[in-house]
Image 1 (tube, rainbow over the protein chains, first blue to last red):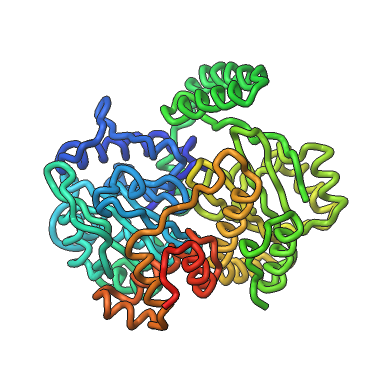
Image 2: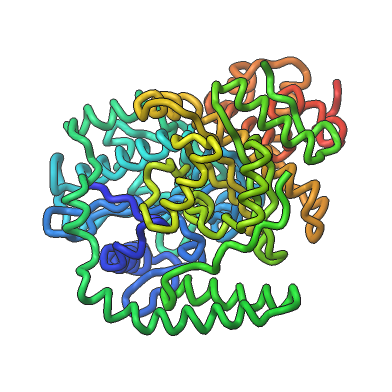
Length: 275
Length: 233
């Protein structure tokens, strides 16, 4: 089943996110040999600090079997930066109705071949249905997704072929990467559902989601140090009386947040003008 | 009724407010509000269609602090329906006050992220049943995404001083497609000329419109000519 984790609920799913970062390390750092930064067996990059949305596929045992990360193309995203080689140095798309999806992967070790639940094809289809449905209900018309040729083949075989590609297929380590376009339409979703035989709601319901969220006792112990860190940052921000000091305090806060050392982002500033 | 293009005129508080009023009329919504956050400047800039008394009350009591619609949406990539906001004492108090001033309970806040780490939020709201709201939401959300970025980009361009004039660059493909539009080709024609799908043409066009802060393709062509990106003939 699919769970969407973003800045609004990530404090409830730190365990799930941790397992997702491990899967990413295994796939992108290991199998695909991409030039990614893996630390302590987790692959985390600077875009994970930008409050992206994660679509995470979880099996009955709570193991992360698939995942993908979504960012708006109006703001900082990977094709504008890390993956610009794919676009041959051309400017990336910028559109309110196009999301970028990156770090699309499935756990090929845990999943089998063939079709149906517990297979690579089944997990890919479920993740795609979740991603497309979430994007569509958010008013998104298309997704540009950075994938490797193997994933491209899986998509094609799952009746979910990209309708086009941007730029050129470009070597990113051991394997090439490409930017594929997918429309977020009922037609595409219906095709994937038909191929995979998935006709149920793929999203975890409330009780399922609770099962995969963090166990309360562990989380509480961590919150104590978190509160101390938080009050230190608040002090720093309150004492900053120039724009530069303020920017520096905010930068520190955001960095600590990205590294998971403090649970919340800096507070919303005071309202200065309303017309 | 067509949306007025705020980028055409000198963007001012009045044109932005007018844009929000027209947006409501066109989509059948009751209220719209834009809030832009510039963290390094430490302030929020707002344009709203709310009653003046509510705006005054909101500002005087610094209600932005307890306004979860802003706090949560600013960190979300997807629109945040107000019904999904977790209830807290502070938020309940905020909602009660908003109700007193006639602010509808059904609403959504659409977050925008700009290239400079700038964040904007377009909120719209409407009274009525939850079911009616769910239908309205599904109908209007694609257009709200476009409107949110349009307002945000114009506000950033008009009011944020540190990075003026920096505009997103168009790709060679976007320029090429605009040029074909300028000489009268349809999207389908262009698709066959460039050997790409019609939908790819559409995606590039949407992107070109956004980068030129235009709501329509005609405006994008006009701006492309003005910026000497494309040739008028």
